[in-house]
Image 1 (cartoon, rainbow, N blue to C red):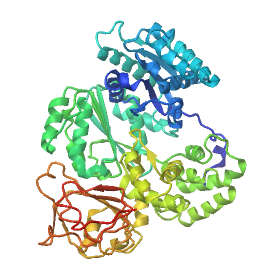
Image 2 (cartoon, rainbow, N blue to C red; image 1 turned 180 degrees about the horizontal axis):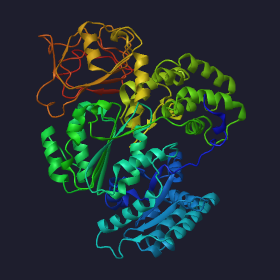
Image 3 (cartoon, helix red, strand yellow; image 1 turned 180 degrees about the vertical axis):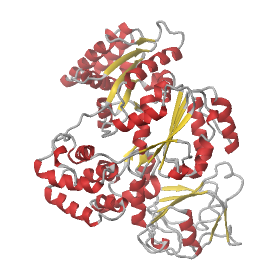
Image 4 (tube, rainbow, N blue to C red; image 1 turned 90 degrees about the vertical axis):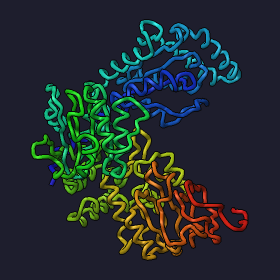
Length: 640
């Protein structure tokens, strides 16, 4: 049982910055030039930077997401350019930035004057005077509008009076100025790791890993971080990465290598691109990539994190020979599999949390910033005890109980105790059971298909199938079941994904799975005509020849998503990778569900779609590289 003595003392925590830098700039002026290069420079040094990548910056208000990003950034860089003041969007961001600066734990604000005199910004003269004349004309009959304009003027004057960088003064090129800015930011952010807002119980483990890295020695070494799923390996690796990035020439963090095991050439290209600073590195095969790594990086001091390795071949592609890298380089690899670690390799075993840290982490998610009510004390201690110090379980259970009353806590505790002897993945299912039906369906779609895909693309698919996917996704994020990454991609922890897939696989055979994502399962279903009305979605990428018959989908009448992607980009144009009956390319597949919303089939092998195919709900169709001559032999009626 967890000790009650640590309950009260660990009930509060101090939030940390989520982002190192927020970039405020006029996109039309500098997105493709100075600001774009500055962003890349910051990113290459491991500085976590928020950049609003919208091409349109108009309107009088900015989103809650942007306001929150400003509040959660340690440093704000303001790039003043000639047309900066024409953007009400930029000016509203600036006001928020200056407000945050005045707060007790205010952020650092650094102005950068790009092709504009600081005095023009300070006194709103020249191009800034013209912009404000237009603003005042726009709001001349609007008292609140004129107050807003005055607020913009005040913010501009205050920002221009801060110490910053004038590109025209003392720099031979934009690159020189960017180097100085990145050095300053790197030094500033290195004093306090800002990767996460709430990393509990990590300090001791960080010190141990740093000791094993032994930065004082000028050798090249690999350090393994090993531990069970959900124990915090990636968190430690990413925190070390952001903390030490400034000590290296170039850095790269490769996430979820296990999930990309079919794309090792692509990962090799990403590694080369990030370490060499070249966008278009395209190696054709493993040996060519290894050769380029050895030739181009042997004199560079690099920091590389290889996250979630589960096969020795992955290391062989990316960092098998330490002589590829320059003196002082460090490779960090995380894994669950101790068998991958060499007998003489340096390894750090991640331990579960101490009781006091476990309570603190649970309280952060269950009560957020509030002090826990004493009546929850005993329940908290029991739930934390059942988590056995595993951070993932503490986060998920804490999030699922947030804002619940004490009777709901008692009910959850009963369910957790009932499953106390089973795998943690089964225990995590309690958070799934607490979701609304549509939220459960969205969760299963994400677990089976959408991990690592851009949020915007995922939302397009979900919106074709559900009535409230935005709210559903927000609920999943709030309950710590889904993460939106710094690259705006949908992510989730391995154990949570495993839990989702286990739910789908509760049926006896693949033909009754609601979702098919595994090529092996898909082949079993189509080869044996096992498909049923239970199959709602199919989404996979194939990397080898796949047989197919015309009747395979005749019983899948509730299918709403069908996405079959070709995985080999280099061979797509050579020939279709599908083969089937001898008459494969004649006619059409026998049946496709009229319930389809999202239909993607690369290299579709038939000449036609089925005559009885009438997908009135279809919103997306992608049949590139197919054998289609035309869709149907006859004209179809109009769709609703």
